[in-house]
Length: 148
Image (tube, rainbow, N blue to C red):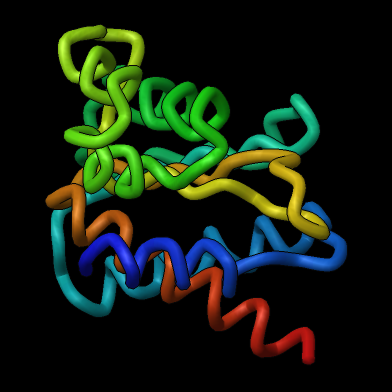
């Protein structure tokens, strides 16, 4: 995925209205995909309008700070955490975040866009950062497609 792909993906994966039920459906799709692909266990965190609406850590997944760091990256940037990774050489703030342990400029965090406004974040952690992003984006796309 390159810079143009991530910009297009962020424009495409937007909701008119996001519900907690949609968040649950996205999380369940991620879990199903991880189990089908027999990958490593993941953690999932979904926050919407400052409320934690979903948190799950698969068996074998050790607690760490990656989900919180990806969440902060998304909320402070207004973009996916993979976006911050791809644009770190162009945006000095993102470059600074590389050495700040409060942030994670790696894939796996995606904003919940409602009518163009960031109202929350969905984070996945446990696989390679690009795989975290892929699983998350695919699951969001599937839920959005089912709405229309």
